Length: 590
Ligand SMILES: *[C@@H]1O[C@H](CO)[C@@H](O)[C@H](O)[C@H]1NC(C)=O
Ligand SMILES: *[C@@H]1O[C@H](CO)[C@@H](O)[C@H](O)[C@H]1NC(C)=O
Ligand SMILES: *[C@@H]1O[C@H](CO)[C@@H](O)[C@H](O)[C@H]1NC(C)=O
Ligand SMILES: *[C@@H]1O[C@H](CO)[C@@H](O)[C@H](O)[C@H]1NC(C)=O
Ligand SMILES: *[C@@H]1O[C@H](CO)[C@@H](O)[C@H](O)[C@H]1NC(C)=O
Ligand SMILES: *[C@@H]1O[C@H](CO)[C@@H](O)[C@H](O)[C@H]1NC(C)=O
Ligand SMILES: *[C@@H]1O[C@H](CO)[C@@H](O)[C@H](O)[C@H]1NC(C)=O
Ligand SMILES: *[C@@H]1O[C@H](CO)[C@@H](O)[C@H](O)[C@H]1NC(C)=O
Ligand SMILES: *[C@@H]1O[C@H](CO)[C@@H](O)[C@H](O)[C@H]1NC(C)=O
Ligand SMILES: *[C@@H]1O[C@H](CO)[C@@H](O)[C@H](O)[C@H]1NC(C)=O
Ligand SMILES: *[C@@H]1O[C@H](CO)[C@@H](O)[C@H](O)[C@H]1NC(C)=O
View 1 (cartoon, helix red, strand yellow):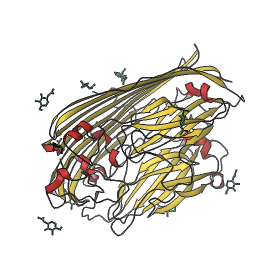
View 2: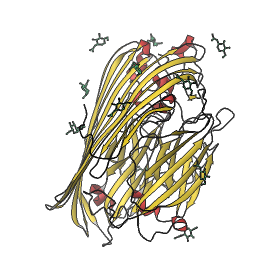
View 3: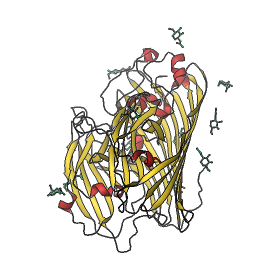
View 4: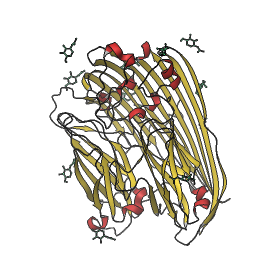
């Protein structure tokens, strides 16, 4: 029982030491092994470059203007206010034409011993990046995250306050200071450069004219996100929209920590009660972020299982980091059908809660609003709105510490409404269908944990102006997780762990209208195998090996990468960006 992978929680913030003795494992107040870091002996003298596999951002062939907006050394920053910088783009770059692309580049260097730290970057209170730091080595590491932030265009063109919260702790043991540069690159448009895909809706081409933060207010000492601490907790903020909005999308940023860092492997409560366990993370393995507008549910987010750089076995993520760990996904919820109810010039609110939550979830959101340039006032009406209650089934079969559990959940949310603007009367219909299945098996007196989890997300958004203008955007997403984790306490505060993990994202997106259509497919699969000997919270020895295959097929670009590493060394790395190759795989892969 002492050492399923749940014990390997790498708490991001608090330095806690919870020594376990083999004699009283089952009575101990906590099974968590907090704060694992590793520093294997190494002959390397140059910094190791860490990276996340993702496709290159398509860029116009123009010369960018680059602006280093923040340079900071994050030493003892835990619990301090975010680091602020003035963002004055026009003082550093001139914009004779509207930039076609704006790229945020985060570059950081670190040396020594340090944990993984979650951080956020906000511009004018609007979150533009949620990420996790890489864990350094004695010989130093560097890494770069590039993100296409063009969707925040309306914010990026004016003076703002740039804020970064990265809670780091530096002392004689944890010596790593993160040296960080945040740079913006503005790419002017080419004469013939098309900023968006073939099927793009001409109504959207100007982008959101206004982005309202749904985040905590300055000044803060612990980030601008809300902290959701349990399943009853509900946090949110009021907002008011201008009178001429014709389209609205809520973008939600989510990350999970401490007792919910590995929510997908949390034990069902009946198992915890039956075994008299205390201090273990429970509430079962299902979580969803529920988004409400004025108290009624408008969206549900079933997040991708991002594993941070200290998670499961820190050696797995060096130098190829886990999917999403350097650039956590954000999740969009269509709000246009509800405009009729919020275009009244009054205050409204968005609130967030997390089904089954344990401490702690960091959540905030950005409300992207498209403004009608040719009218002072738009109006609308909600036609249909229903959110099916969650259907959750739990099958469990266990004796003592061993057994198996199946958790299946589904939900759907439908909304439709019309908005009248200078574009005409447009009806928007949004459908979210979510499916979840988690199989958990526990063996070897609870030391062995096997997880298979699949989340299916089907979204469609229909935009109907007339029979001649009907745009349909459909997306299918599948998030997969497989984890096999076995460990053994060998006494004296030491244990061995063997863990194999698979993370997978598959996506298919299609946009069709009477005049055009576009589609893209992504399959991104990562496999890792690791073992380690852990004493206290230090990985004394071990090995991590990772293989990743990334396939993207779009109408205009394709990308393939096949890369593997072991013991910090890249073994194989193959990349292609031509489209003429492997179109064999289909979605969804079984
Ligand atoms: C990993 O590489 C280091 C040298 O960089 C070597 O000393 C160590 O033995 C290797 N570990 C394994 C398990 O192969
Ligand atoms: C933006 O900031 C710069 C530098 O502080 C200042 O010179 C400029 O006047 C500001 N622009 C606006 C529109 O406030
Ligand atoms: C940050 O930028 C400065 C100035 O260009 C450069 O000297 C430094 O090496 C950069 N740091 C990182 C981590 O890239
Ligand atoms: C749990 O505790 C209760 C009350 O102390 C005891 O009767 C029961 O046997 C214990 N069960 C296990 C599995 O230890
Ligand atoms: C949000 O609105 C709902 C319904 O009007 C209300 O019950 C709730 O207290 C409000 N929450 C916040 C944080 O303002
Ligand atoms: C429960 O698990 C036991 C032991 O693995 C097995 O023999 C039994 O068939 C299982 N029962 C059900 C209903 O699956
Ligand atoms: C849960 O869902 C899976 C996958 O859809 C299915 O194979 C399984 O039979 C379901 N199990 C239960 C107990 O509902
Ligand atoms: C999503 O769509 C696929 C293909 O139509 C279907 O097989 C699957 O059951 C759907 N999933 C959900 C959660 O609705
Ligand atoms: C336990 O650890 C202590 C301190 O690291 C060491 O002195 C002792 O020899 C170890 N005992 C065993 C049985 O390994
Ligand atoms: C874990 O991966 C290693 C290396 O590929 C393999 O030898 C081992 O069988 C795997 N274990 C499990 C339980 O999948
Ligand atoms: C990826 O590379 C591995 C060798 O490292 C190879 O076995 C595998 O077939 C490759 N996958 C594809 C799709 O090319």
